[in-house]
Length: 230
Ligand code: ADP
Ligand code: MG
Image (cartoon, rainbow, N blue to C red):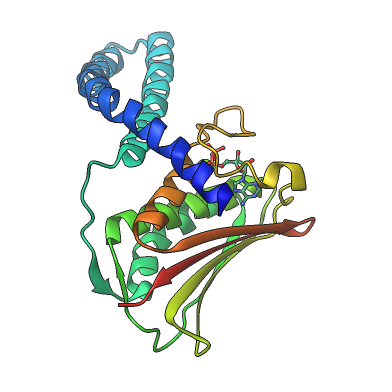
């Protein structure tokens, strides 16, 4: 519990900073991106290959900043929750094509085990999709040489008010000393990482009244998202 309070305090601070600046950064960013894309088109029409390459780099770095700002905005959360009753299977079906697509690029196999007759949950679909996408993305990034991602829905009669969704990968796993830092804002082991993905997951799941837990060993990593039924 102490750990959760610490996490949530940190997230609040980050949220306050983010709320004030993220929108201000995003607006000019959108304009910059638009004009750079126009510039790119002109360069293409003139066959200026070298310059196109430079502009391509600018565009991909802009995307990176954009991702960071989006994650900031999710953490800052002035956005009100739109919780409605839904089936978890429907939510997963919507993100599965994106995850499979990303997996294909990294030589990762995705296996999805839906469970029939899952009780409906109360959630905000867009936010929940964000959680599952982040978990899927992390798993795929962890298995760079290929591997398997298993997504599984579970419910049990022992816990009738709750369902869980598991994301299990066959990546290298997370060392014990790293494991309790993975939800910290800005913690990343990736050269290009923002370290905000799991903070965003944690924030959203907290807001939805759910839970997120991670366990790992040398054979891979398991994230379990618990959600209240409606
Ligand atoms: P980022 O992906 O930008 O690094 P995250 O908050 O999504 O930020 O993840 C934080 C860190 O947690 C990652 O850098 C990585 O070290 C670790 N991590 C998360 N998911 C996994 C996973 N499935 N396998 C191994 N490590 C993971
Ligand atoms: Mg991530």
